[in-house]
Amino acid sequence: MDESSNSIETQRHSASHVMAEAVLQLFPDAKFAIGPAIEDGFYYDFDLPRPLTPDDLPVIEDQMRKIVAQNSAFIRREVSKDEARVLFAGQPYKLELLDDLEEGHVSVYTQGAFTDLCRGPHVASAGQVGAFKLLRTAGAYWRGDESRPMLQRIYGVAFPTAEELESHLAMLAEAAKRDHRKLGKELDLFSIHDEIGPGLVCWHPNGALVRQLIEDFWKAEHQKRGYGIVYTPHIGKLDQWKQSGHWEFYRENLYSPMDLDGQQYLLKPMNCLGHILIFKSRTRSYRELPIRMAELGTVYRYERAGVLYGLTRVRGFTQDDAHIFCRQDQIQSEVEAVVKLAQFMMRTFGFAKYKMVLATRPDKFAGTPDVWEHATAALTAALDSLGLSYEEDPGGGAFYGPKIDVKLADALGRDWQGPTIQVDFNLPQRFDVCYIGEDGSEHLVTMIHRTVLGSMERFFACLVEQYGGAFPVWLSPIQARVIPIADRHVEYARGVEDRLRCAGIRVDVDMRGERMGSKIRDAQMAKVPYMLVVGDKEIEAGGASVRLRSGEDTGLCSIEDIQSRILAAVGDRT
Image 1 (spheres, rainbow, N blue to C red):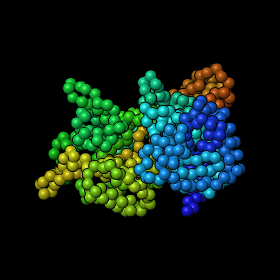
Image 2: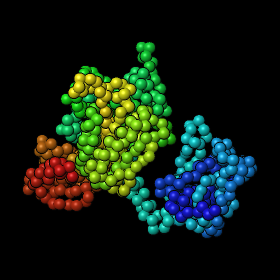
Image 3: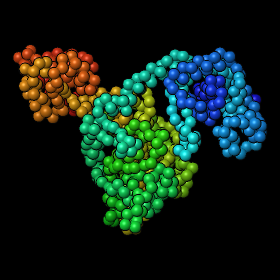
Image 4: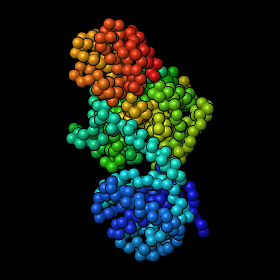
């Protein structure tokens, strides 16, 4: 039976086999683990006699090209597990994988002198793997378990044509310039320190200011839409998290409980329980619903060290969280309102492209299938009513309910996790969250969990990379920098600074004794939107010469015009 395929995933997986063959030719004692296709490329994990260096990658690549030139066929065979153990004698990771397989027979693929345990499919021959490039190495625990051996992972990318590969490499080069970790340091936005702990963020004044501007805007827009801003504690009794189901379904991502006064407490992984208790603090009538509560609440989740990454994967983060308590007949209209708010937020922050994903019931879930079907139907109805197209993610829902995930596309076309909307009938049942209906009896509320930005940390990282650190004027930590040409111009520069600051513009003066060209270049590197150069000519005219961070020189302008221009950009949020 011919199981070869020319799909891009198959090409990438086949490239990982070619890479494994090349590594084994260069390191005959290598032990190899797994090598799947991933988005844009592939990787393979190895146990090698020495650590790899960047200089090793071109050597491995050259060996791969020799293998591709030989164009050996990928040959599939089915063998018994006993035969496979003989084939993979001396390869402990493959033997362990064999032990986990229940089938009496397994499939192996051979190309050239290399044989691997694999389900396939593969391309017909090594010459069909397409254009590839090895990018980097990283450490990876065997099977993701920190108690198991640390392996060396080699990442590569592969595309059907050399042109597509070159285009992707150019995108990666641009992405490297926009990397929020790099720009976070250069622009003095945030830092993460081992002394405090990995995955725990320290916000510097520049980054904290941008975050404050985002949060102030977020609060104002929520209050316009009938949300009450609340605050809830960072810890709570463990019993609450057992009752909610988080301890049962989410335990591997929770921190260990702490003993306080004979009770066990937990760092909160979610904000929803506090909001439930606020709702239950008094009797609620059907006339009051919906009740909308919003909180910029910091939560804590244990993420393995190997997956922590800048601001996008951390252990302590702030969710722009909200919960809507409503009747069942209000679900669709409330979900539609949340989608519209999310769309407004995305437009405001410059994300014109996004996609909707409907994530359905996972294998491990709370509640009953009927309840899940009802919740999923409510989300589907809202999306259909708004005329929005969406993809489905089978099994991608949270343990307590289905959800709509919004994936934001940044300036480079990369997807980021953005807003999330979840309909939940389960927590109201577990905590007996009720309102008094028109008939005078108690009825369970429906909860809608939602974020319209996601976590502040991840959204901030997304913004940094979207704009390459050059935030829109309304979000820029410094909106204007006054640059005196000589010391005799400093007093005038201070006066310009005072006028702009009184108008609500964030402005400073570069007082250093550097040349004007160096000051302008440094302001451009700091992504300051407006540079106001002042010298004898500008003082005589009562204005300033304006340079933009793009390098454009707009010439001499009055201070009134400069002020109006900056305030207009702030007001338009452009």
